[in-house]
Length: 219
Image (cartoon, one colour):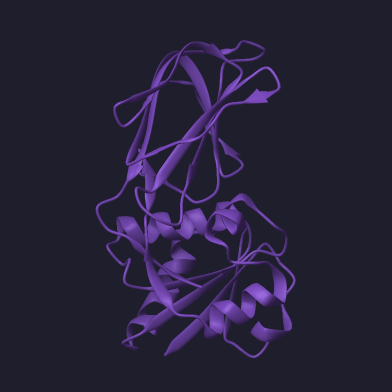
């Protein structure tokens, strides 16, 4: 097995990863850095890449693997602190996550992407513009999530099928989660923040859905 660490934004290296070959990259890995590793990993029948960073880093790696049709690469995730993705995928944090990423087995896991071709691993927060509430209508599969105005809409992946779930906030209250294969929102205008990274411009619609191919999460 060929195992390589992608260390993002100078993240502290857990002891369990100290002896492994490591590539330094930015907080959100550049596709060129990932491409440099892929030929090395491709030389092994069981390639494994360990992402040492936050949710945005993991999402960037999976987005690139999806777009380049390389989802056969096993992925370990080592966040330093607890993140939404760490909770969703039950990876742990720090050295315990590192040991799991090295010693664990890869399992097919639902891959959630949006209509812009970006992978979601932790949480998307969808809000209205400025101080305005989010206005529109949203569905999880055929079930209506809301119609009218809400404070925010939240979308997260799940470890098991059907793969994606969503809820809304009204004031300080959060409603129950609905699970399905796809989440769709229509709105006059909304801002989408994926894994802590806010989109550059408002959108009139947003959807998140389970990709036809899973990713290989090491746990």
